[in-house]
Length: 176
Image (cartoon, rainbow, N blue to C red):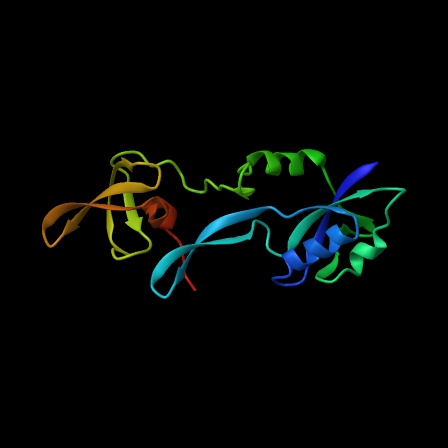
């Protein structure tokens, strides 16, 4: 019987663990996502694991042992509850794979709440970071238009959709 198990890896060693488990004949799935990162003052995309320090390994019980998995390079252990290894339902892995881009294999996350015209927002990154305004409309798939009040004048600015958060979500947020 084929079962998926959740594998805990060493810090930043998900790819090393994945390659080692593949070499040993295990089916492995490491869901990855593209995320924006700021480097030297500009934003770039970085591919990172969806679940840092975790990946999935499919084991055929009776034909494959879990012992080599535990001692593979990059692996810390197999997630367990008490003395039982945690079995991940097939539907979870199938759903993650179905959501992945067929060409790149990367997952697209939709973490933002839908914005509607007139909602107060705060710009969280970029040149206008910290300013508050009113959401006007979407400007394509990647940008939004926000109405700001600057120096007593109203101005519309176009910013990436990830730079804007509804003000009510930020209420009560305490930064480090």
